[in-house]
Length: 348
Image (cartoon, rainbow, N blue to C red):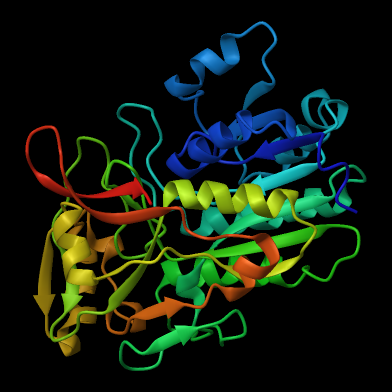
């Protein structure tokens, strides 16, 4: 189990989205990786051009709809994957706009769960794929009132059937992969991530702060009045490094991944360019339903629940001890090219 760690051949899903791109680039420069197959919904990102154009490139790009059984099955049985000796998969859930002008922003709630089932199914059926690394969400945890939630991998999940659909999709995906972590034929490492901050100040994997479409606008996000939960943070580069460490490790199971910083939700909203509207908690659900009926483009992002009221921090001792992960980037404020202050990441 695990294959030869010096000759990894890796498939990365949603490589056309921000975290997927970051992981693919990290793997490309990893001497222990011989080949990378990047899979995306759309055409290859422009930043991949120089990788793909090289005559001796170790990278290949495939355009596949990961939410449909036939295209996924064809991919895993193709010459690209089976014939190319792919022995590991890094599954990056759909999480942001891709590098295609005019593509609409999609929440990917049902799609995310369908993709999780199909990718896991193909990995379990393959005799060549030995390792599966999955990016999951730390928002799956059940939160008690207050900001004193210090969560380990054994903390309870939020199984509330009335939880917002966006959070339920993350919980569903988590349980799909978590149910196979003791499988002796396929090693699974599930990385639970808090809010991810990119080098350019964008925010991903926060079920409230979904990324704004490039050049797009939407109305204000609804927040319950009187609450300002703490948000644990991690940089996109640390996510890519954690995925790479998990790939080369022999440890299976669930691992919390986080940086050293945290911010109140109100500050995160402010510094990422989102607009918010404070609404009394008793009226929040009604306001969201009214917005949906009115056809507001932002209505699908409006929901109530513990993640908008109570904060948390993550205990990352297991990732540190088993994977050797320690955050290498800090998150703070920096001046953009036009002089604006924005949230930014920098190497420690």
